[in-house]
Length: 120
Image 1 (cartoon, rainbow, N blue to C red):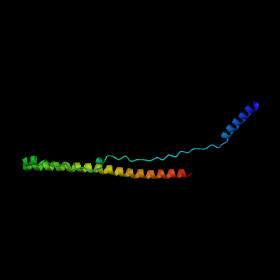
Image 2 (image 1 turned 120 degrees about the horizontal axis):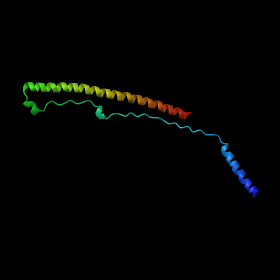
Image 3 (image 1 turned 30 degrees about the vertical axis):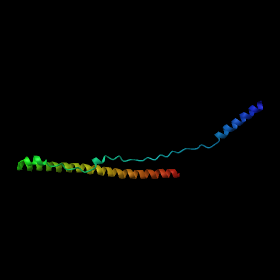
Image 4 (image 1 turned 90 degrees about the vertical axis):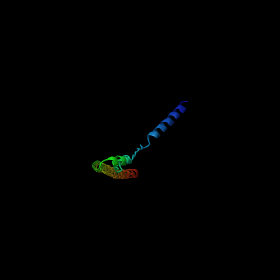
């Protein structure tokens, strides 16, 4: 009985020591970070439209001075609005394009970094 017990204890000791004798494996986790451009809606990126002149029935009932005044006021307001709006839209488009280029460059650098880490 002692020999069987001694045999099992010896086998268990041998298995436990064999498990401890192996080298330690290190696990290396490589994560790739991708940046994504969040663009505003296309509605905010298109140029502004023009306001329409007064409707024909109203325009026909106006005097000559009122017609000229109405058209001039509408035209000046339209020009001012158009200039301000178009400048804003151009600025938004330029910022989006600059960010698109920066993000693309960053993603390419990140992909290169990850591929170099995988080679090691």
